[in-house]
Image (cartoon, rainbow, N blue to C red; front, side, top):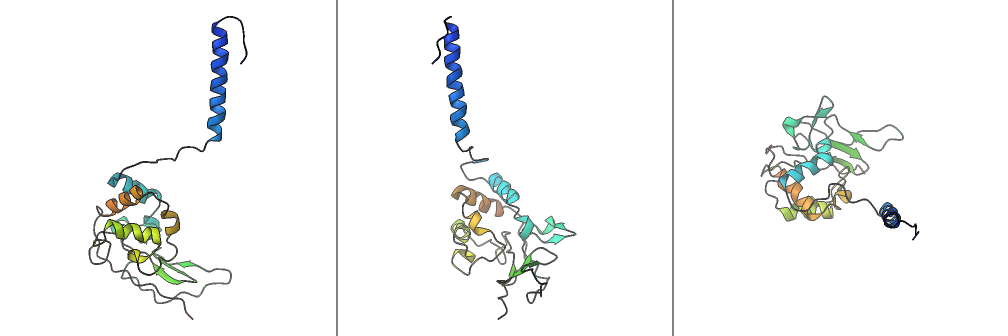
Length: 188
């Protein structure tokens, strides 16, 4: 501590050192998580679906943009894909015009219908099924592996409340009947 005669000046210098030390310590701490929220809400789920760009894959594209009249309905059942396309040398992945069919060394994957349609979407899923699908990277939480480009390993790091919020939001969007085809395995 630096002592400067004058009573109040000593206190100011001392407070200044404490503030300087606090700034130094704060600079060494990781920043708080942005948008970290607790609790489950449809609004939070909508936010997470938006910032994670779920529409970028699960909503069919039309004229280079997601067609929001088909929001999160997955690969259109009317768009037939029968095999992995031949790719030029040096390329291992292809995406179809709707941005909902992806081809690579794994074969061809089709983005899932995430709407609450009970026959073709997630309408019959419960929260546990949804959370297990994301956490374990398995269809219905127990089936085949989720295929690229689904970044489930990153989404598995979401909090339980975040996943519950996403599921709660998905249950509120319009149900769209759209039966997505099964993946096509790689040619042997």
